[in-house]
Length: 119
Image (cartoon, rainbow, N blue to C red; front, side):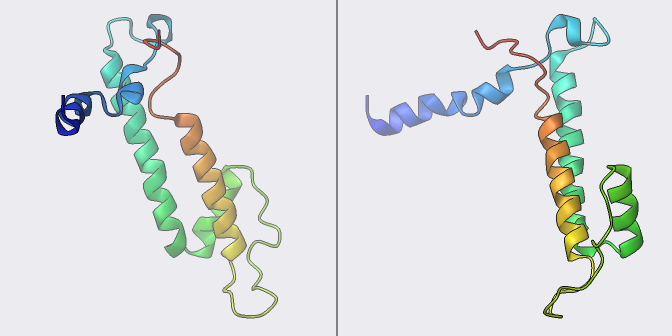
């Protein structure tokens, strides 16, 4: 077969690993629930977190402080301007919040909770 035929055939398996995994039966709260709905819910939750990361650059200081404190992250020294005077106050707070949100998005994952379907 030609390379283009192989590419066309393999396209249906693109991203298959992420699509295949889901919760095992014991991990579903509602035993009649569809694992695809579970995955869709967690993907939406992850996308909301990633959208919040995009908003961090325009957040005011009060919102930054509230978000950092909700994650239990210290705000001490996070709102002081940089030493060279070129940075605006809150750059450290923005970096801390981005890091916290990225870690939260990683914990949420793509809706996979187990190795269900891996074998």
